[in-house]
Length: 273
Ligand code: 15L
Image (cartoon, rainbow, N blue to C red; front, side):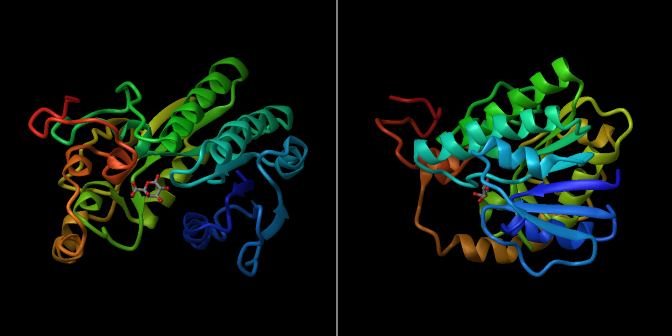
């Protein structure tokens, strides 16, 4: 793998991954709707709106792999999600197919399965239970990845990313935190593993409190180095400053579940009343 395109390269996750992938892939083409930080060796930048198929195709031209981080990265209104995460996602996979790209690593999200109760541990074969319009768009992306892998032979890794940060920033993130180094390891598996066809994995570090069975990632050789639990005290201290959110605390997705929630809810069962 020599030539890699990273979409959404100007965002926080893009910045962190760029630092870790410098020198790994000789050509790293960055794209975003806004300019990325000063370019490092081997990096070039091309401006592209995901909703513009011709622009995405131009960005994909000549590339062997794509790390797709672009799009709306949190809950948004339907129109923005539609343009960037549904139409944009379709454009990304279609551009990859037309340009003969071999692999796509798709930044999916824990919010594709956010409405599972925390007492339930799930694997990557669990049905999607999106907690937001954003989560729906990530489930759509995973489905598109499967279609393009099964029908067109693209190799695809969907990473259901938890929360990328230097350390877990609250109680929920103790379960879902991923150290950027560990995430970079997963991205490299997606771009390089010889047997990969289509897989979904969790982007999570070695967290004692994880709600996810990440067996598929381990089978592909993932060995996370960081442990959320090492930051327990700071995470609990930060949690103490947050407003109470019993519904959010019941489900994997936290505030994404409680936002806009309508109707009553039984805190014992998590069921709607
Ligand atoms: C995500 O998918 C978002 O991209 C990120 O901004 C966080 O909200 C993260 O999930 C999370 O669940 O903490």
